[in-house]
Amino acid sequence: MKFRLMLLTLSLFSRMFGQSIYCDEINQQISSMGTFPFGVSSGDPRPHSFIVLTQLNPFKIMNGNLVKCEVSKDPNFLQLVAQKNQIPGADNGYSLKFDIGSLAEAQTYYYRFIYGNDTSRVGRAKTSCEDCKTVLFAVVSCSNYEWGYFNAYGRIARMENIDFVVHLGDYIYEHGPGVYGNKDLPRKHLPGKEIVRLEDYRSRYAQYRLDPNLQDLHAAYSFITVWDDHEIANDAYKDGAQNHQAEEGAWNERKNTARKVYFEWLPVTENPAQSIQRKFSFGKLASLYMMDERLEARTEQGKGEDDNNRSILGDAQRTWFSNEVLKDSNTLWKIWGNQVIFNPVQSPPAVVKALKSKKNNDMWDGYSEERKQLLQYWAKNKINNVVILTGDAHFSMGIETRFDGRTLGIEWVTPSITSANLDERISTFKAHLVERMVRKKSLNPHVNYVDLCNHGCMVVELNEQEAKNTWYFERSILREGSKLKKKKKTSVKAVKN
Ligand SMILES: [Fe+2]
Image (tube, rainbow, N blue to C red):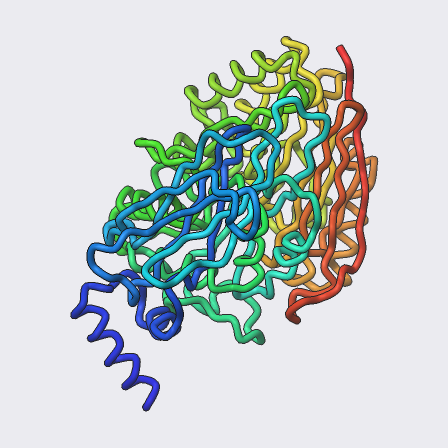
């Protein structure tokens, strides 16, 4: 009763002073915290620039005060290279994004924010290389707050010499508490309902960003991110989503709200269309292509019928991708930050029977005509060394990309940070049985690694000879700060034309 009274007072107080950025539960948590309760983040590292971002505590806003951002070569801020100011505004939830330019290539910098008498924690960001010999980065996806502790995020934060982190989406989940998660853990979604409106989405990001592991990772390394479906609603496509119902309002409104809040919380370069389609260059060593496989152009998922007219990328984005890949003919590695599994993977007959479906229509399997177009184009133009990095699946897999008798590259699927693996949905015994069946060469001759039961991340290293991948698996997501369970290493040799 006492707690509810406190919430009510806070709610009234917040709304009286125009601080209705977050739900009451988040307001209750942050009202006694400092100016920067959500930490700091950086992203989109390029040879001479990166983005830095923070969100102010609405309870600490002082009219007329500027937020100062400082970037330095040293962690003590004695060698400043940039100082910028911005006026915080309620329109974007007191989110402050700075584009930092004129930096030196392949150099580590430190950044912080100052507001009134308060200074944020110090973040670290590294510009990318222009004449790269090697690039090393982590790959992550699918961090559901209710399924467990973000130990894998914490592990990456403590790794040394990572250049950046690629996040393939499902950074947040839209469900209300208890809908999709481990009911035994004291980690329940806020606000206590499915997120639909502006305040809901902001509150959900705020909750995730109060997580210490995620905060540490953002402070340690720059992110390169794309959204998948759960940043908006499950199985999202251009004109709707499986988890969007008419009574929740207009889809376009929800989509635009989710997109706006994504840009408020993730260090993605601002652009008028709020597009996440972009390319990162690492000299002649590699290019990284990031695209929108949900909101831009994706047509509705089929139900297993003919999918000739279905598209994930849309014509404009596919043409851009094809042109960029062709321009990069002399770039060794073509890295694609891809949201859903690209290559066909056969399910064992028992699974097909249980699911009453041969393929997952939300993945590229449901858009096979467009997949064929991409493969044909790569084959015709002799595009080699394509490395597809995939999220969404909640398992780990290594799949050769084959077309017309040729191997065009590899697809590495990253495990979820916490979202449910197969063994958390059916029993561990059954999940291992399925794992053995999927692995069978008679069923999937092009699949060379399968793990359906572990959470963690991937760390990818590119050099002029090979692309290497290490899967890191956590011992447990049910306890904070778990130990490393095991690693699995794999690599592919570069094909030289
Ligand atoms: Fe997911």
